[in-house]
Image (tube, rainbow, N blue to C red):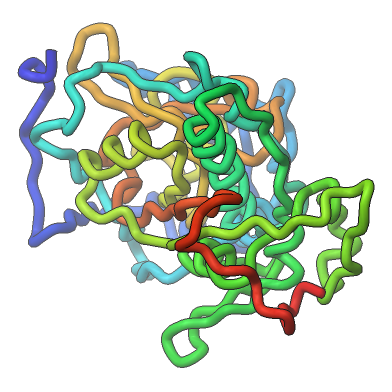
Length: 354
């Protein structure tokens, strides 16, 4: 099957770059506003695309917004990639020459443990994709690991993204990279927080953004779920697409960060590849639940759940081709602690959560 995949790529070291010239200086100005119709009409001129772009007919959330506001309010990874005054600089299409898994398709939403994959959520007007993607993928994994451990079906426990938004203030790089709630954060630090401090259930701490600054949180008591769910490790999935396939198939969904352009905001269905239309909006983290292959066997793609609600894309989900927009460069995950796991530790008594 994969001998038919296109295997012609170019790179500089481990990373490739593409410089896309901006049409005008105005197009590169973050103060200008987003237009569904303008971007969609431009995308439709590309007849070779494998995905559908639609104007704002159902999903109108971004219409008329400044690009900088879309990035800060509906994405949430701090912008750390360089930009050029007259061009857009982006991580480009770094595709593996050989896929790890010979299975052309894998999806945790299918099969005996499909109930372990949580539904599409909405991060709302908060730059919390870093927290939502980490918590949602970790909750899926917890359910999968418990089912395997008990050799039976398991009930998925919805975990609290607000716990991370309110309480995770971890930093790295001499305090230059920090999690700042709705102002943005990093999946890497989100999983580290889950490992070090743990998170509570969504029943204990619902996704109520009016309480996004409330930490420590009131301790939950019975009959609410009063447990703290922890990870035994947190790690960067290194090795590109083959390593991601291995990790997903073996252990469950993961979080991946990629570069979003204006055309992605208009995505409706199909396999997304950057069309060359639109400005760079920013960085966004999503949950990856599997992969697939196009009918002609030429393109591998990731199957993902976004966090913009179910009216966007394919009921809140999307497919993106391997190697697009730096997708394989920043994937993170954690291994859940189970009740009988002697390698896990309890959260410290002075846990900032309580």
